[in-house]
Length: 99
Image (spheres, one colour):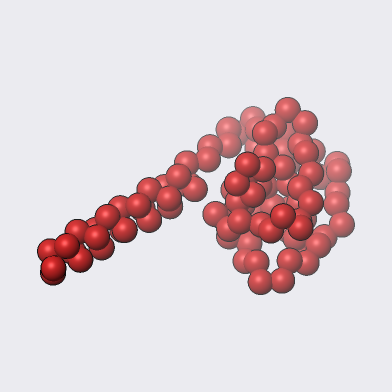
């Protein structure tokens, strides 16, 4: 029984690690980053409050948060607590926080 629990714990850690790596595998090219940064400066949004959500990479935003399009980029953005946040619209996870 002890061996079985150890194997289960190892499997759990393996799957948890895979999820963490997947969240960090988003790659924004320097060109995309420039396009995004320039666009959000020209298209300012009102800042919203999202109680209980920390602005960390990998944090999923609730469906109640409206995401805004950046032309020619698959990601969306929103301004939360006066910080621009880039979000993967498929997962609603934060992929970058601009200061």
